[in-house]
Length: 120
Image (cartoon, rainbow, N blue to C red; front, side):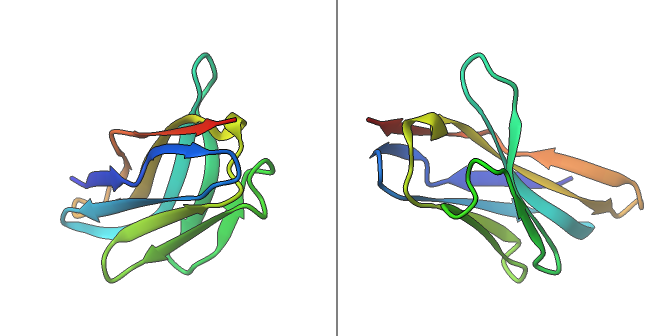
């Protein structure tokens, strides 16, 4: 089992910055992918950014050039640096980790979500 603890959400004015953190704990073989998703009211959850254990990244088109995902493998922590925030970035942000458990099965873990609100 993997437990995820998110932090860093809050209220910020448009143009501002926030940094989200997600610390993973648990006995697993690997944490291959770490990612951030978000879900705005009335909308489906969408991928914001993903990073592999090797550091390869991909981003949603809407956040490219503004958001940066990174991870510290020694701390099993993934970060999302969000700059130039826009009101449309307002959502609940969820951390997601995908890997292989001790029983060799794949797992998909989710955090509890952290609210990000960007005021205009």
